[in-house]
Length: 411
Image (cartoon, rainbow, N blue to C red; front, side, top):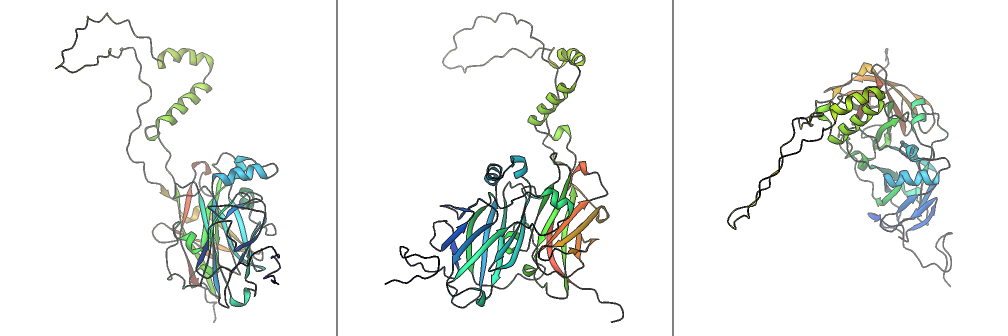
C-alpha cells in the first residue's frame, strides 16, 4: 500500500520528486508546483495572479542545505486589463498605477518591491522585478514545501503621496514568468552599480514614478530597497541610495512628429470662436486650383524612350501650414539640485517612519542617506518641492551602497 508523501497528496496522485537545487520552473503544469491560491496556472509561464493575496507552494528537495529562491514577476498591459476586469470599481486608468507588494515565505517577510510602468531612463512598457531571498537549511521542512506569498501592505502607514499613487489589490494581473531554486552564491562586489538592467537580477532595489492625478503631471518617486541584498549593509551601517533627477526639456514645434502637429492644429481650431474660425478657414485651407489648360495630344512613345509622368504645377494660392519637423537632436535634460527635493521613508516590516537626508552627490547625482538602521525592506518617497511640477521630472537609481554610521561626539 502506497503512503502519502505530504498532506497535499491523495492516493490517486503519483509520487512527485522535489525540485533539485539549480532548477527552474517555467510552467504552471510543473508537478513541483503543488498548490496555488488566487492564481491561474499557465502553460509557457507559471501563470498570473487573480486575487490578493496570492500563494504558490513548491516542493523542493533541499537535502539539508540552504537555498536561494528567485521569482521573476512581470507588470504588462495584460495585467492592467486583468485588474480592470476583476477588481470591483476598477478601470484601465487605475490599473496603470504603480504596485507595491510584500513577499512572505515560511511565515516571515522576505522581500518587497514596487512595479511602475512609468520609469525614467527606459522606453520599455513592461516593468519587471526579481524576487530574491534565501532560506536557511532548517527553514525548509522535511516534506520540502516552500511557500511564496504576495501580499498587499495594508498594515503599514505609507507617506501621503505613496498612498495616493498606489493601486489597491496590487497582485491582480501580475504574471510570474519563472521560478528558480539555486544555492546561495556570493554577493556582488561592493560598489557594484545597480542600474535598471542589473537591479531585477540582484533584487536590491526597485523604483518608479507615482501618478498622483489623472493628468500625469503631478508625480512623485518611490524606491523600495531590501537591506539583505545590499553588499556590506550590516548592523551599525546605513543605506545610501544614489540617484539622478532630471527635468526633461519642453518640446518645441520643430521637434514634434507630424501626428502631434495635426493634433495641435485640431485642438487649437476647436477652441477658437466661430467668427475667428470663419475668417481663418480660407487662409489655412487650400484654395481650389485654377483649371489647367488642356494638355497637348500625347504621341505614342517609342519602345526606346522611357515613360515620363507629368504632374500639374502646384498653384500659387496654396498657403503653407506649420513647418515640417526637423531631425535635430533634442536638448539634453537639465539636472535637478538636491535642495529642490524632499524625501521620507517608512519601514515595511514595523511601519516606523525613517529619517532620510538629501545630499548632493558626485557627477550630478543626489544621495538619499537613511539615518535610521533598517530592520527589513524599506520604502523611500521622493518629491519635488522647489520647482514647477507641471514641467515634469524623472529620476533613476544609480547605485545602492552601505555607508558607515556617524560616530557620536565624545566617544
